[in-house]
Image 1: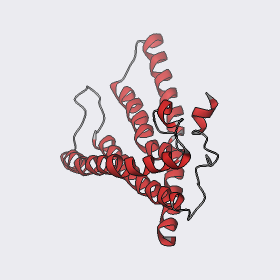
Image 2: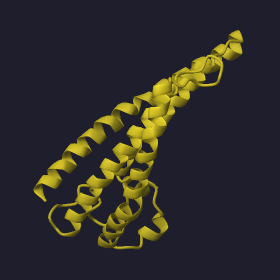
Image 3: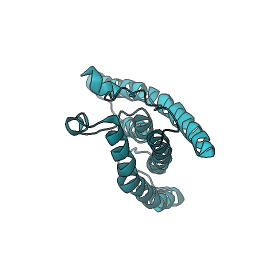
Amino acid sequence: MAALLALTRVIDAVTTAIGKSVSWLLLAAVLISAGNAILRKALDMSSNAWLEVQWYLFGTVFMLAAAYALLKNEHVRIDILSSSWSKRTRDIIDLLLHIIFLVPFAALMAYLAWPWFWLSFNSGEVSSNAGGLTIWPAKLVVLLGFILLLLQAFSEIIKRYAVITGRIEDPRHDTAGEMPPAATEV
């Protein structure tokens, strides 16, 4: 179990580094969007490439930060139900749902994204829009996002099991039976 917990620390560190890094891409997407809108309105100039860059940046943040949201326990859940359960019950349900739903879903999506990306990469696929960008980088981000989510799911499964069996303290900091940070703010 010590080796598995060491692996979770590595996965969590990679997820954290990527999650914090890609958050800056939102600023870039907003600045590009604003600049494109100003150019379009003020100078009657626009570019499909700039629009596609915005989409690529936003998609990159969404795909690569999903694992970080899972790590920080900020993922979507039905708080109306889970708030009435004990912490142990929530941990057991998290463990089971990660195993039954999250791992198969993320694995299937990574499996399906590989040939989708590879075909695009090998063919040099380009957007059908005039002045559009190469598509394979966006497809690569989808593949990497699901691989990262799958790795983080394994990390969460290992940590939930260790918490349930009393081998570690809960690293999520909701040890007093509290809800995730965003839910407690509401």
